[in-house]
Image 1 (cartoon, one colour):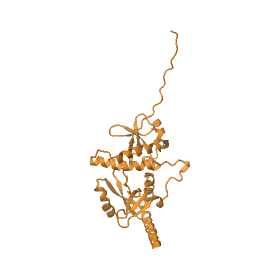
Image 2: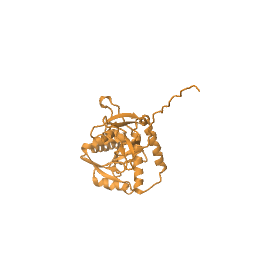
Image 3: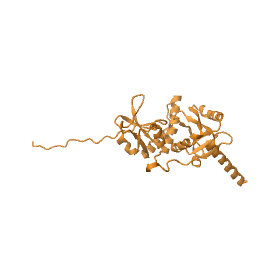
Length: 268
């Protein structure tokens, strides 16, 4: 009996892996708060999960549970040719589990590492691989909730959100990031509606490539501790991954030490 159960589990796993890799298309939920796959945390395993569905009617029905919680979501179709990039992006986000047909009979959960190889093992020209999955993931959870609160006009931060804020700063302080610059125009700045400008930085190469679609920018890897030294004067701080989490951090620019005129002695 135990062997039969093991065989059944192996067959279910193989079927799920084939579905997630060979289907013509799949459907997922995108958070309108981050423009990224909607991430949930399993309360028992603490896996950070993304939901995938074989049929559009299934994702509409099962996704309604989140809509009822006033979580702004959008259904997106992922074509087979997009699968590899989609799963690779989950790695950089810190997601570790994909749920096929979540909340349905026959739901199956697969560890992301069992499906695809983690990107970044071999970078061209010996370039260092940069990633900040802990920061990225915490920021995703934070932004999913904080922007939902704005929509529902909630104002009180929970203790959990306050803890996330502290975690974000802790992860940031330990990270290395890609900073963009242009040989001709210098460092790009992103202006907010109130006129404040922030210097963009990126958690990984995939995020930098989104910003650098025209391939006109260069990227330099900078430790968080050194970022204040390279901030331009106009910047109020940095904005991490501006195309999705858009996490603004009011990092202060490091000022050069002031010089003073040496005192000169004279005869009285």
